[in-house]
Length: 638
Image (tube, rainbow, N blue to C red; front, side, top):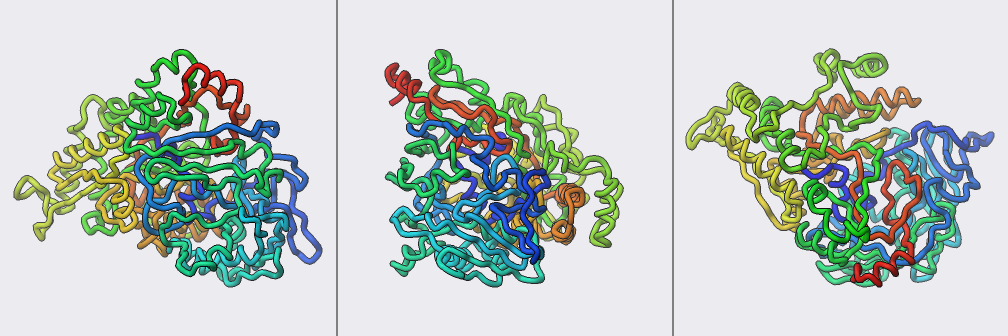
């Protein structure tokens, strides 16, 4: 089991790419600060946006609080990625996109990493909207240009929006297509979005404002260019980096643009410090780690507890040329684990899912595979003030009661679900396996021919778990040993190791009984992204809902959370959401690590106070050139 936060960042996973379909997830928490200006005509005008109306950074802020504004520019950040890539289009529905391709693009607004749901202008210098959020108008910076020198205009924004609606991921296209009724360029640098009058006012402005902006002229120059098709041709962008070179399945190199139009924006001061960002591809984690030791690449986010615990004793660590560092991560851990495909008939009965969960021995896996470095996870917002504990009470109880009959009676009085405990001394905890066997018998899955459990129609209780060959050994061993316990119960279980490209295809087509996944996201606020991950409307096809969860209870809570009017109400709703997601039991949670595990050649430096919700290694860190030259003179780097 790799640490769940690190799992979401294995190698160099680009969070902006991973959540392109969840652009509306976070809305603002009331954190105090600069109040938005409100005119007499009830129109709000501001340099940024938050749902509850407050921004921490005033209009004249010089830079973000967590950057080093004097950070030197230069040098290279080099990282590893596992598997293969056959496309440089991060938004394709097919193929495997190369790492970090989306760093080449800007959006109208972007969120800061020290707040939840606060957005500040990038392509947009300001915005305005009516108090009921029926529309938003973005006033764009006329100095913004694409890397081909052409201006970024409101026409490009409208065109990009329509591309995502017509050719984007279905879950995003359906959700946003319903909420946005109009997108128009009022002039070359003013764009207006109009919203459906009957949808929630949550996630509207930040969703359209955070969408990637492409060059309309580039797409229209060749009618074969599509957003949803893989290609090795890069769409023209306006971001701080541009593709420099690539070698299929070996490496990708991005170069910082000296002519980047936005390099002096307050939002970008102290950021984007590397001249180049290089991604090296490797077939597996073993090859990647050996390459790191040899200096083929210089920065590593460790995801394998075994390697972290036992392998960072090589000479370069001992002599200080490589730094081994643990950096606190204050975001809630990713809700990863074994996800049931709820579209499979054998999992329709929740008691069957609960029985199969008893075969997973987290404690043994943690001690035997993870060196005791992981902590157990119960909640979708583990360790935060939103985590449900005990039976509901106070504001959460009142919220649940307001939902009516959709809430099961037991949810009012039962403690929030916590995962079973197992004995760590041996893989097959006999006590839990006996209980699992009893539950499966009661559910009608009796042991029959071939010592396999079968239903009344003679069908076996099948559980096939595909996984990519690029996973760390600790993860693959965890999957294989879980399958062993399932087999001991008489389950027709199989772990299927496949190549990463095939795994990507099967994941997209939901061709599995169960999958180890980190697709679900934690949440600190409400918004449309919750519907894309946990809602029913997109459940059949959303890539961010690998279980296909479609729960009237969860839907009701999410919808009601949109109508909350203050922070306390929102928190009560989200605590109820955590409780209900655990009640539905569609994920067997694995563990998590509260820190980033990073190792890097001793030439990188970072701000004294990193933001709570980002490691920032791609844009906040920098190279100390004197240290870099020293490493080169010592032969530590290739």
